[in-house]
Length: 144
Length: 160
Image 1 (cartoon, one colour):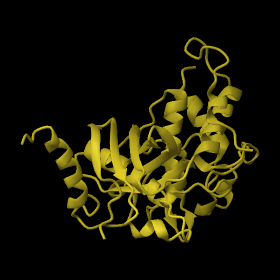
Image 2 (cartoon, one colour):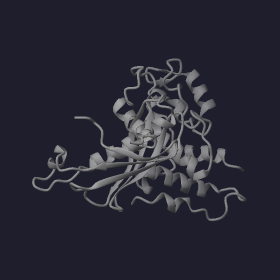
Image 3 (cartoon, helix red, strand yellow):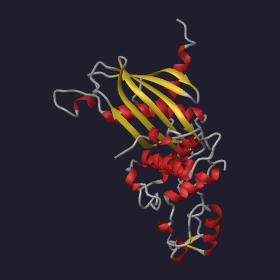
Image 4 (cartoon, rainbow over the protein chains, first blue to last red):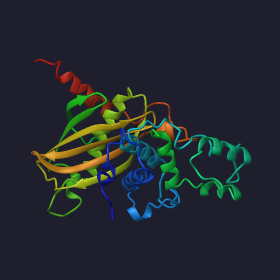
């Protein structure tokens, strides 16, 4: 069932004076993804990958950035959540696989993405940009 | 035929909001395509009217330097049919705007009654399509669109 984003965005207490818990961040991120991607709540699991599992296309990432900015009152600089010019760079991706240099770059640019398993077989179309990664990114942007 | 689905602007606040009007007439061919003997204005053209209202608003916000393309219809909810003789009012506002694109939302009404609620995403394509090249001239904002805005701005100045 599709849930209204507003139901996710109701703060249980004033977020200005108290840090948000991981569950609260997760619930809001889930609402953002349900609205941006037109998927069901149940599909937005922590391990679901935005592209492969939830069907996100390139314009959806801009939509997600806009909605996250609004939902959390944060500013997301261009290329920070979704780095540009990494996966299209021939030094970083060859024959559909991320090169060691590309892996170093990804670790630097996307510290919130868990690349441990991916590193064993780094097929570029299997990049684990998951719901959990978005939650970790948002948490890194919020005051501790 | 000209691909222009709004007739005039009645309000335009740079980078913020715009209101446009479209008068639906029985003379328009597209009213007769869906149901025989029951002419209605197609929903797809209601979305297009909002895309043109909001698209010009987004284009103007960037000084018409960007090629603004409708990239996503986030939501389009329709509440009633539009019939010949209806006058549609498109009210659009920019929700968010960045170097890469913009999001906009709006309502469509006729006679004060809600016809549709629409949310759209626009892409500044030169900023987004890595590896693809587009013609240098701005093929999105052709004269037929910029004329609309020009004539709205002139309205206040013309006295007969």
